[in-house]
Length: 382
Image: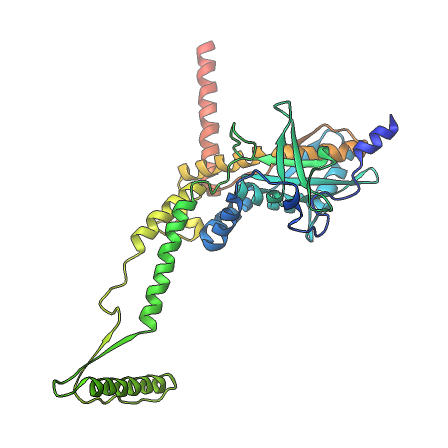
């Protein structure tokens, strides 16, 4: 009995960060069935700074948490563990783990983590690259097996499934991979990048002007003479342009009827403010954040209304409810391995998006209403 428990309860080797593996080893025997939208979402964050800022804002607005245990010793030891647990990549503490965990959850719709156990104690909590893993549903609807690459680069079921943390956001009945916050954005992001690319091309054309030199010949010149004259005009024009690049002012002198035009000078640069704003409104609406939090000052006021604060608060609490099972699993594993009472409660920090004065007034009005209600009840009873 002891041997079986020791084999299942100790995973001394990190499963998600086992060093460098040959990137093409899986091509020999395994073909992943997942979609390729992960790379699209990652490139969207790199190409559109507003989306990257939205993910960072959502992660920071979720805030942190504390734990309340029934046993005082368990309370002190669990708090110390949550503040000092290594998370890899030079990060320490569960807050750092949640930052990377939530970042992956918002970007890909799913996040993966691992509890590293060695010597019968919980040593570290790390997050991993969820795009390198596959999920296989078991015979039971509640069972899932997570696959990862082994030392040879082949996809295998990870040996310590009970030490893994797997969270999905808004999963669909068809597959267990969850839905990213960027779902529905690639089409609009593609249009936005086309507009930005066109703006860059137009300004490059406006800053690096191309000229069209037309030399109208005379009827007295034959074909060879006209060609020779054209070469002379082209050579003089090229010499004048080269001297201008070097900072020397040089005049261009030609004999005859010569017409010089700027290529594309008649085409104006299109106004991109309206279409860019329309697309950004759709993208920002999908994130659930007010525009001014992302640096988009579209209105005269920069204060958040009560309705916006309530909606954003509900979004943040939904994210907290999604990742809370992973937090509970880590705390429960630590208390169990330390032999402590595993009765605890996760208490999230308050989300304060309104002025303190407004919150105090709301509490005052609520207390006054309860007072008047109690007085009215006493009058009825008397």
